[in-house]
Image (cartoon, rainbow, N blue to C red; front, side, top):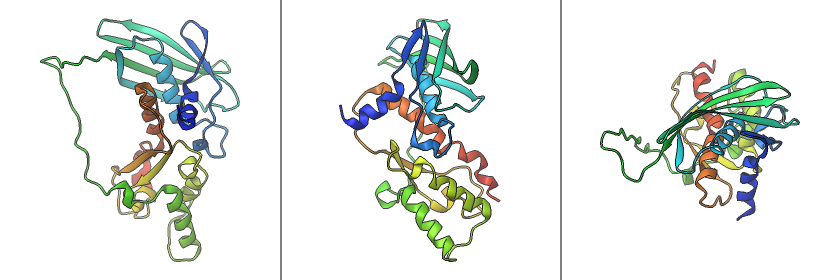
Length: 244
């Protein structure tokens, strides 16, 4: 196992303190920036991992709903309380409450499905087509883009609205720009990603994600890291049309 894989796995190691109650203090990631609040994608991924600890290996998550209630303090451990809502032969349901200092900070409901090699005749199967975008090899990491954009702004070569400059400063202090993060991010369209063109109100944008090291072939770890990344760019699509 590579040291990088071990670094990623440690976020999903729990102490089981009671039946279906899992505790962890591994909450510090570079994505939190200077904030004492934990990165939301990590809490989402850990809750999923805790839920999956209570189901059979043959069952895979296929639907998830979650809600953030309070900030999670990185200096205090979190307990994930899992409730077994439904036990079925093909489906089961779990509810997860993340609790810190006796307060519920995050909730999740996740449904698991028995994955079969053969697809049932009346089953609906869907997979979207891979979008045609520029290769990641042609693009720059965000950690290279942000400093260069800030330099252009300081030199007067690029004029942006205060909200965009604030956004760049935010990126500059978070792990998307930090080599210590688990992933590097390469946006396909810099203008759209940062919001340089206030006439572009599209909620759709594309980014390449690449792990900074080898992760091995553990299916669960890959699944948790996909969940980990959901809070990195997807949340921004909601406010992207409002860069005004």
